Length: 504
Image 1 (cartoon, rainbow, N blue to C red):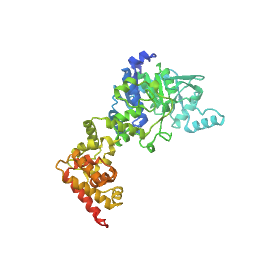
Image 2 (tube, one colour):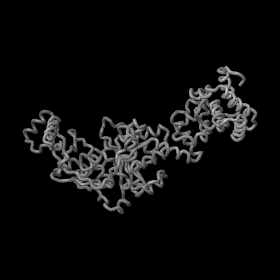
Image 3 (cartoon, one colour):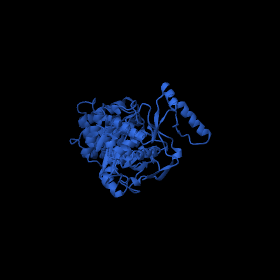
Image 4 (cartoon, rainbow, N blue to C red):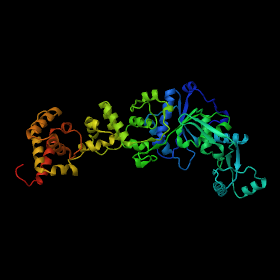
């Protein structure tokens, strides 16, 4: 059951680094209205690392006050993706939709303190106020009337109007943020309008709910995107009006694509779900996320989770926008996949292929084929989606890609000679394992006086139908002698159909 704010814990916010290292409380507060964006995932990771580094607490809060757009499906997916990333939480998930009594109590306390006032202006009147301010070259901020007469209020009620409640921003004045990343940021109250804290139906706005939650949950450091910095002075004003102390703030830079525009789907992937579907494992994704604005030094780019926990310090986050580059993620992911223990890589590959449905319609032996082929692809992949391009031929009858067939058809005589020479060596082997296969084909290559590409590329195409695939020697061993010989003969027969020259 949600607690009343009047009985909530409103702790003194630790002001020294020693205090924060023993009692750090941070939070991640996504809105369950869609996928977990890369920027949101980075915010979650930064908060999680800060908490784990300090031995503090990481609180998960779902800001679901947008009842029309928030969905249980989105909430479930956010929780699943956080678990996929390895970001566990110590408290929560708390839902703002279940905390209405706390917000009502806070609004009542603000009313009692005279910190808010009833604002009766219509939307048209507000627009006129802003237009007049612009015409006078002033900031288009709203200051509602506070001197309505009883008769005027009665008339507006008769029209069906219901007031919103606005926070009375103190004038003159300023709010100063000592930001851990951006330094001192000052907001002149003249530039902050009397913002709404309660809608006409009594429900809280974002700035009221976020401020109350941070107080009630004892949050003493808020790490979030710099797009929220304009909300920060408003939330600080609410907290102080409620008798609380604002937390430390650290506003991290925006994430841009390689074209220096705000990250979106046009840059390849904008959500963690898309990265997962694209075949990236959580470890390289975490590594890429943490480097979006943060660095330990100018050379280290790969960290284990334990190393990140040990080294992370939000004060090392840059003020400059971070650039998310899919190519860099692919390089990082490829390094990670190659470094995995072969059995672990096979487990990850089979699990991914099974989860995506790839194995479902490829026969009863599909999982076994995937596991046995894992060593053939491990050093060639940067993401797990590349498996089909390299090894998908193992699950299909021999089919020729256009580009691969054109390579053979460009010189059919040469292709027949190279493939026929390879077949002659392979069909007499008693031991059809990789080393004897490699030795036999290497001998034939030298006998025919061909380069490696001139001889081995036709062998690859003869059994896979592709110009890009798993290694030729490993592929032959995995196929087995009977299947390999059958594919060689099938290829030669197809080539013979197009042969019009002399003796091959």
